[in-house]
Each structure stands twice: as structure tokens, then as C-alpha cells.
Image 1 (cartoon, helix red, strand yellow):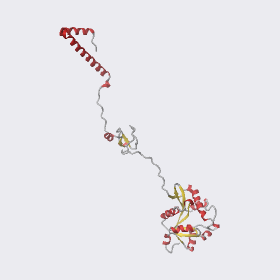
Image 2 (cartoon, rainbow, N blue to C red; image 1 turned 90 degrees about the vertical axis):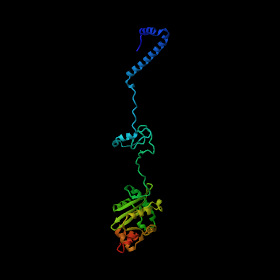
Image 3 (cartoon, rainbow, N blue to C red; image 1 turned 90 degrees about the horizontal axis):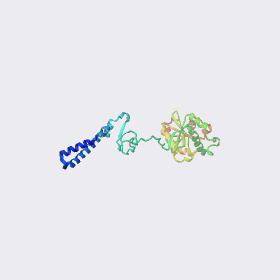
Length: 293
């Protein structure tokens, strides 16, 4: 909006006639200020209409986090809490806020998910012998059986003391072998054979490097705790350390006539081995009375 020269001249003449020459400068200054303000207002109004986005709007109040939690679709997102830094809703399992990136506080209700890790085995571990441990079991048996060399009759000694075929034949005949594992390594084996009315302890051996450390006792006590009926053990008569071991655990030697009968009934061995072996029985065997055996 502008005022041309002709209009200004007319306004000046009118002011001269109305106010006189004395007050003309004063009113001219006032008129100039009015014209300047009018021009400024006109410019602002024109700019306002040219840009419709300049309308002043009140800021939208932020919805409180507690209300956002109530409105959240819990069935799909399963909201658990909100970030203490930016109030962002955080679903279960988040360790960091998906909006601001802050790590959630330890005392926040959201706990970081922990990956499942296999628990380390509790040692020592007594468990059934695995098929892939046959070689290790044979090594333990044959190393420990070296103690028999020169003690048992020479015609009963052979190397290896137990071949793989013999061990597998014992397993096929129903001898269930158990192992004593410590720090991931097999250190002892023992066999259990359940027969009618009695259970036999067979082929109990401990790695020579682990002897006198309770391995044999642990295996024997574990198996006896699982056996409801009487238990018999056969071993060489000359292996006095083995006889003493079983006697220490409550077993008692049976008379020769009874042991010969039992060896022929429950064991598959040569007559020579029957002659040079003994049988020990646990207290449950003797508790059966005279009819036992």
C-alpha cells in the first residue's frame, strides 16, 4: 500500500488551511508516524495471509505414560513398563530403550532376558556307560587288572585280561555297566546284572591313577542304593585287597560249598575259575534265612 505525490500535496494544503503554518510541522510529524505504522501493519497482514501455516496453535499436551500404557494393545505388544528417560513404552525383553537408546535401570521392572546356557555337570557323576566309551572302559579294566598278574593262577591270566569281544558279550548277556565320571573323564566302571531273586556286582574296576580316592566305594554304594534285593559279588580268592574292600562295605564270605553252587548257577566261568574264586554276600542275602542259595 502506497501514497502518491499528488495525494501528499493535497493533504499538505488541507493541513495548512486547518492548522495554520505554526503547527504544520508538528502535525506533519504525527502524520508521518501514522503512515509508517499503517505500512507496517499492512505488510504483516499481507505476509500472514500469504503463509497459512503461520496461524498460532496451542501445543498438543503429551499423553501421560500411565495413560499410554492403558491404551496400548497389550494382547499384541505385551507392554511391561516405560523408559524412565523418555517415557517410551517398552515391551518385555528389551534391554535398551528403542526410542532413546538408554540402557534400562537395574531396578526397572523390565529385566534383560538371559540366554539359556547348558548347566555344567556336577562332578563326580555316576551314570550308565555309553557305547562310545567302550574303549575307555576296556582301558580302565585292563590297567587295573594288572594287579592280578602273578597273583592269580597263571593258567587264568591272559592279555588283555578282558578283550573287547568279552566285554560286549557281557553287555549282551544283561550286565549293565555304570561309570564314574569326574571333570569329564571316566575313572571307574562297574557292572550290575539283575537275575531272579538276586543281583550280581560284576567287573568293578578303577583307573590306577584314581584308586584310594573313593571311586570304587561311590560306585558300589550308588548301585546298592538302587538294588532292592540281595547282592552277590564274585572275585579271585587270591585278590585279598578286593575281598577286604567288600568286607569293609558289609559283605561276608560264603562257605565253599555254597559259593561253588552259586558260581555254577549265576556265573558262566570255567571249573578252574570256580575253584580259585570266592563269593561274598551282603546282609540282605543272610537275612533271607536258611533257604537262601
